[in-house]
Figure 1 (cartoon, rainbow, N blue to C red):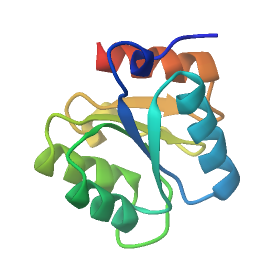
Figure 2 (figure 1 turned 180 degrees about the vertical axis):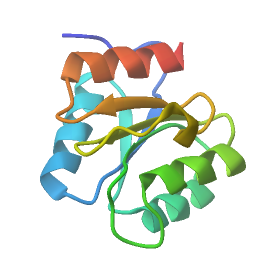
Figure 3 (figure 1 turned 45 degrees about the vertical axis):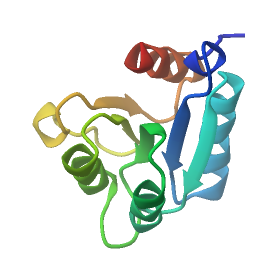
Length: 127
């Protein structure tokens, strides 16, 4: 088992944003298995609403392809503008975004997600 930063000196809160329920559950399992505390949102609007109420989210893991007012790239850009300290990981099974489309400091991981790689990336961002 890989130990997440959540097991070292208190819980790190991760917001998982994914519209597909089974994929969202898989992403939640990855984060919880690594020791992170998880909040979940089914779209960008829900994610923004959670972020406006919470001051303890340290990382957002979002899918790019989502219905609603904004996709995951627009969500990532909004998070970077409004909450600059929050770390961001974006993912998709579709075409990978070019680096210029990602907010500064954001990381892209392709789907299907490799559990070890996701956990290692989360730990690196929280270091």
